[in-house]
Image (cartoon, rainbow, N blue to C red; front, side, top):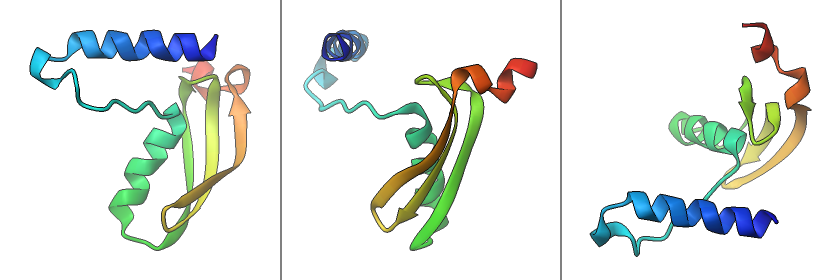
Length: 88
């Protein structure tokens, strides 16, 4: 089911692109990992810890990730039902 959903999502994204760009590779990443990657890339630090909190994204409301260079691993997360975003 997840592969089918990913295929449909990719097809939907490709339909939205201009015809000349439809052959460009498309990669999907997990919601909180995408937020954390932006912060990691901008720090210039060789290692660190990232915390992302929001209403919801890919079934999670929070994620803590440790990173060293290009390697990253999740060390904690909270499910959507525990979202602080449900209060605002």
